Amino acid sequence: MFKMADRQDRIAEHQRGSTFPTRTACATFLTFTLSTAVVLLTGTLLVGCGSSPDEEAEDADQGRYTATGPLLTDTVVDQTYVCQIHSIQHIEVRALEKGYLQDILVDEGQHVKEGQLMFRIRPVLYQAEVQQAAAEAEFAEIEFRNTKALADSNVVSPNELAMARARYEKAKAELAAAQAHLGFTEIHASFNGIVGRFHVRKGSLLDEGELLTELSDNSSMWVYFNVPEAEYLSYRRNEQAGNGTKVRLMLADTEIFDQVGEITAIESDFNNRTGNIAFRATFANPKGVLRHGQTGNILMESRLDHVLLIPQKATFEVLDHRYVFLIDKNDTLRQTRIETSGELQHIFVVNKGLTKDDHFLLEGLRKVKDRQKVEPVLVPPDSVIKHLELYAE
Image (cartoon, rainbow, N blue to C red; front, top):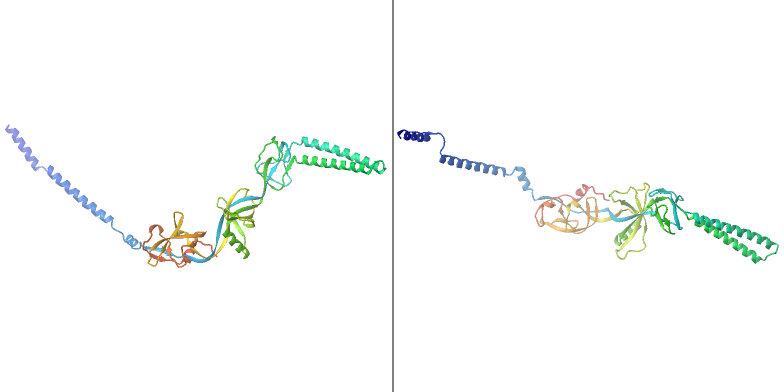
């Protein structure tokens, strides 16, 4: 037992002199380490949240925005009208006689010349009618000659000679009618044009007047569009002043047609339901780009005198209405509704909501709000407009 106690004393003494920390010492060291880390992290965050000199300068200029005013000038704008494009000649090709369609001698979309044979209806019956009429005409002619010889010899009366002549004339007329019916079995192109879609096929039994196809002359095109009454009156005034009536055509792919058109006709009366009147413009179509039934937009120039122009980028829309941020005398923004009467490239023509002495915000529309006070930096309107590639006169 003495040895066991002595051993336990030595173990306890060794533990007291050991370099390993006790449980209490370990807890104290961990608390100190965490505290130090929190202090270092807090200092790092404070340093990271500090503003750089450039950011501080940006915050100082946060209330300064570029502003300008409307430009009062004369200009020319394009009025746009939806249009329908028609061939200058577009007809339906129909059967003139009843019978079986024997031959189709053209194809859909083919260019044909005036007088070219397109369809042939089986002519057997009509040929027989011509032969019969020809025989009757020959018989009537022989009868007339014999009667005339007898009349010259005073054998028959003049009335009998007149009857023979009448029968002969009737026979010739019936022959001409039979020949005409035979001619109707061949259908020729009425003019140079393009063949449309076939509505029948070879061997079809046709009724008189049945539709076979369409034929279009696309050398020139007629473009129809509707113009409101007020713009019609403006057009008439410009026309009387000697201004041109040239128009351009924007196709469905937004490309401008390479030929310039001219207004060649105006309908006689207005449509009472819409208040519009139909205009017709004529375009040459040398490359055959335009086809019957196409759609597009007519661009007609309209001269505007003493109008206000503003950049499109200075406006914004709310519920289909257009607004600007007007700057009052106290440099406070006022959301103001405007109305436009025309549009150019990057430009709106304003007819209501602004005066020539007003100023409005040009830049930073998304960074501000109504009734916010700002420090505007004014830029002359003509300088702003010139940088928007405006075409004006």
